[in-house]
Structure formats: structure tokens, C-alpha cells
Length: 59
Image (cartoon, one colour):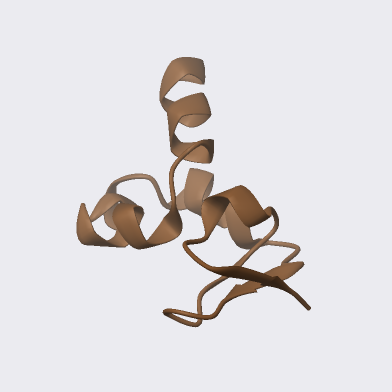
């Protein structure tokens, strides 16, 4: 499961949502958004790290 978790952390949240990954890997997804520091200008999603958003802006 470590490899799956690492690959999920390297993806953009928009892509994860399109791939329906949230339903399959909810716990790992929560780890990416549980302490948000960035918001995406494109879709409004929040994330802990800017690398997980398409157009991140620090909040």
C-alpha cells in the first residue's frame, strides 16, 4: 500500500476526482486535504501542498 499512497500524493486532486479515486482511497485522499494551506483557482479544491492542485494559491 505504500507505493499506492506515494503515487496518490504526487497526483493533482482534479485528476484523482476524475479517476473516481476518492471512493476507492478515501483515507489517503483525506491525508492530502486534512490541513489545507492552498486553494485551486481553477476548481476551488483545497490541499495541504501546492503540488496537489492545478492552479494553487496560498491561503
